[in-house]
Length: 329
Image 1 (tube, rainbow, N blue to C red):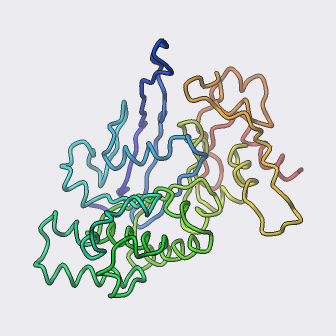
Image 2 (cartoon, rainbow, N blue to C red):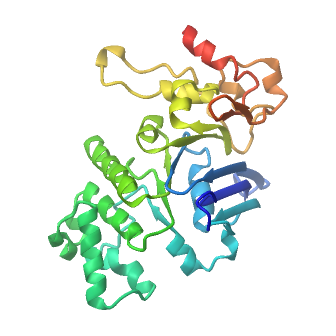
Image 3 (cartoon, helix red, strand yellow):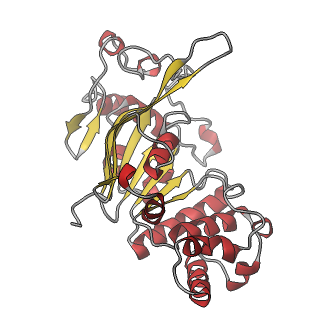
């Protein structure tokens, strides 16, 4: 396969569920993901950001093959994921989940947990597997003595290191990190982020890093995509999106990052408290009820992703005016 071929490619992917609100209420469609197109080149990290409920985790399930798209296509190494056998899929794509407490079997030792993928795929003899497990534990910053321990004997940060070791033991083509630090203490979050950065540089990892925090994504990702109500509203090089966001929602997410200076108080995101209902999205631009720049056109016409200088694409009718509005504040 050519190095120019993206490891991960999503082509106009949608995911729709049918949900009910009560015994006597008719079922209604929920558009969890609506027409998302993304690609992740080899040895790069794409950050996917947005508030809870925007569709990030659903997108991760679609990429892992745990859910099937309603329409559109997910390709790994240029192949439709639906055509890949689940064992081969597990070798190609591995997840690191949010909660290290529930993602590890409490009855298995750390060596057994990390080595399980090797056993399932029949790789190596017993001693060879043991050597690979110990090598992987060292790579993620754990000692050999941890191999005989159980998850309950480890801290949250150590458990997440175990989860990362298990995900990497088969040398997957793509790593899916779904909020891998949000369940950890702040000081431990920094350690795990530093570990992921080191591993990405050392192993040349290709990864999708999902988070609600743009500041976290800035550390790891070379490119970023911002999701709102199931759609990508802005994407581009991380530095460009951080320095000059072209969508009001991206601007609000950046403003929501807390500062360590207590004198500054809580940040004003200008997003209000009118959170969207995915069962009843507004007409026009889905962000219009919360947008500080809303105009009549936004309430009737949905904006398309448009290209801007610097490799950025944004879905806002007034994307040209957003940087100027931010500078004027």
